[in-house]
Length: 419
Ligand SMILES: *Cc1c(COP(=O)(O)O)cnc(C)c1O
Image (cartoon, rainbow, N blue to C red; front, side, top):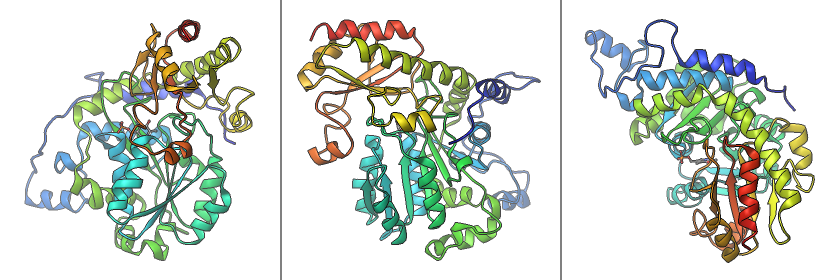
């Protein structure tokens, strides 16, 4: 449980944090790849992080810094790193914290890219994994006891729409001194995991944060390192102790920069960060609107869709996640709902009859979007993996946009009349 979100507070804060009151109102773009230093002493200071000025754009840039500050504020964090994409943020954190032989625990349904990152790419580098459903606390606790290095989950399963008990998982990770990262892409403002005790939050800013689908981007946000009882000082993180002791409070940032960003270069570019900030100005307005619309569309479809087509959304009494929705996600769980047409053939007929809703592999856009899952994002996945991720043959993922919710629902209803 957490405090209700005051959307007006964020409307005021975001509009004013993105712009400037004096001079150029819009955030400035600094496209320079390199930055000149005053003298040799300043260069030394910048490289040792005692002087806070840009070093080289691969490790940071003033436009990214502005974006990082805004996201840090609304997530209630201590610092952030803007990346080239959401996958860039997730892979930066994973490779900064995990070594060959370590194990990562993944809880719940996952976005396809994250699933293959862990299951295929990190596995190639001998990083082991285990997956479990959101409520398998026996597995979660046993894995934590075994000394797993990192826990990762999504605030809302995409496209399964399973809702985790975020607070309980975070508390267990803190009890067992294990780093926990939450992918908060679908629920910016609605869920604030750092305020609930999490260590790291990641976003694909390509989605809800931007809204306009004009900028690929990601961001990782971190808490401050604690003066007492810091979990990073647990023996299992001994390879990080040097950085933690030297950098204190802000150590999460150099851990990610020196152990991943600097060497892999998944850095955001200045123009992308500018575009993301333009989206952030209206984030609070859009989040409030979209989350009201999703519940409206789900409720219309639930009563009016013909037999053989069903809608799933946690706001519906028929959803297995309804109780958790009402207690923990009272102001919404993001832009997604799903429609199950039963078979791939029926799903194709339904999608091809849509007039308003756009077919694309994206979510969190200002426009409403839809996509058949098994023939696209999950086409490389075997049957067991699809079952675990809650992806059925006839499943269509829908992301609700800013249009009139009645018009969106009507588009789905007219498409269903073709079945
Ligand atoms: C899209 C998405 C990602 C990946 O983000 P990109 O910006 O496309 O790299 C990660 N997690 C979730 C939940 C997503 O929806």
